[in-house]
Image (tube, rainbow, N blue to C red):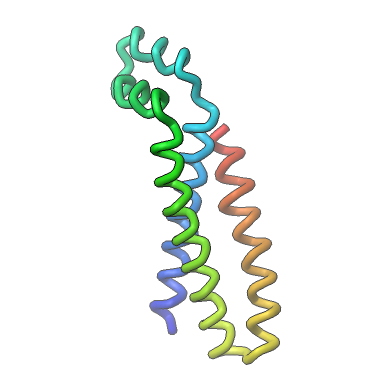
Length: 113
């Protein structure tokens, strides 16, 4: 059971990194990426490539986000059922959803912006 909790924590951290990546790509403009490249910034050429076709990269991020969200939710339900039964699944799922939103979606994206 402990390894499930470790996997859930890992998926939440991974989800946070993906949220930061999504917000960063969404907020970056091609013009700003080109300006960074002209300044000679490291990895600016890669950023220009990403900004030339953002859907290609964002769709990969969205797919990984779905795996992280669904995987962690399923594992939390398994943990809750083993520890608390059916009512525990409901209560822990609601609590986990709220915490996931706050830590992964709201805080990570706010930090990225």
